[in-house]
Structure formats: C-alpha cells, structure tokens
Image (cartoon, rainbow, N blue to C red; front, top):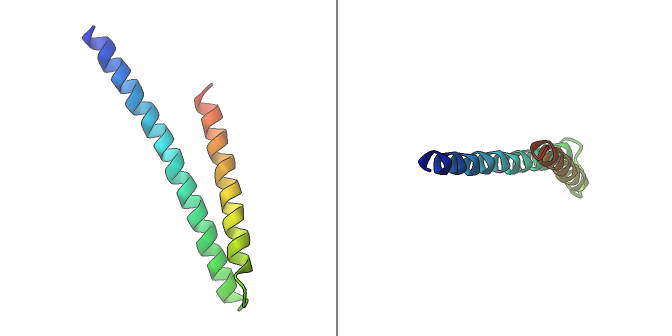
Length: 76
C-alpha cells in the first residue's frame, strides 16, 4: 500500500518536472527571438521595430512547435 503511494507521488512529480521544463524552454526561445530582433533593429538602424516583431513571432512559433513535439513524444 505504501509503495503504491510512493510510486504514484513519484509519477506525478516526474510528469510535473517534464511539463515545467517545456514551459521554461518556451520562454527561453521567445526571449532569444526578442533580444535577437532588438539587436538586429539596432544593428541595421531601423526606425520601426520590425525585426523585433518578426523574430519574436518566429520565436513563438518555434517554441510552440518544440513544445507540441515534446508533448506528443511524452504521451507515447
């Protein structure tokens, strides 16, 4: 009885750690896109933040792709 509780709790903690790491990855990828876009805007002296917008959107799409791919892989 006690071993079943430990296994159940361990499984919940393990799955929480997997999903929280995916969220952290998503945030890091989006931040890289935003800061990369800001750098490109400053480097090319754009008056509008076009590269920031484009790179941040690319970061969002890339992070969603990676997260969905990871969720599908975890559920197999």
